[in-house]
Image: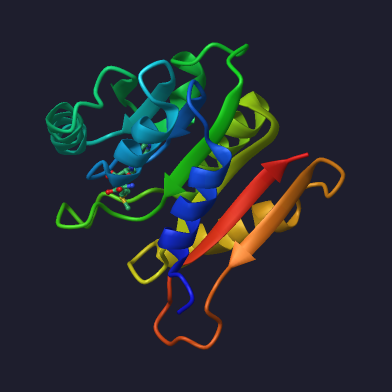
Length: 187
Ligand SMILES: C[S@@+](CC[C@H](N)C(=O)[O-])C[C@H]1O[C@@H](n2cnc3c(N)ncnc32)[C@H](O)[C@@H]1O
């Protein structure tokens, strides 16, 4: 059976991220991606995790402590658009994940927004090392989701092919705004 987009993103991250790497979770939420990244980089690596909701930061912190993965994770309650204020510009980032939309089981009115999402993606691209990747899960079924989806579609389609490989992973015959994935690789 073909993998769902989020599962596919995780498989690619498992392949690309290794012990000791520095990575970013740009949308921590319930901490599932943060936990995976923490396990992949191990105790000598580093995960920067961003979210604007204190509930997300708190539940993720609890999850990381329970699983013994907190040491290598810095959780930052700030918008990912400000990530350059928290990460030195000489850090070589090997991977970053964006999981757009609202926090599942949380406040559905707090959503990622096109403008700040694109600022954050651009800032990550500047920090990304060669062969580094960004995974971006797109959800467009909620109010405001279509605008963000269209902005990200336009942005990634216009990235220079000399500098980046951009992959989309999408079930094209599903109804009702199926989630899909972009992976950007810096050449
Ligand atoms: C779809 S959820 C993330 C799910 C998460 N990856 C997980 O594994 O549970 C999107 C998250 O983005 C957060 N968010 C919204 N705007 C943000 C911003 N500007 N910077 C960082 N996080 C933001 C929301 O608070 C929400 O928790």
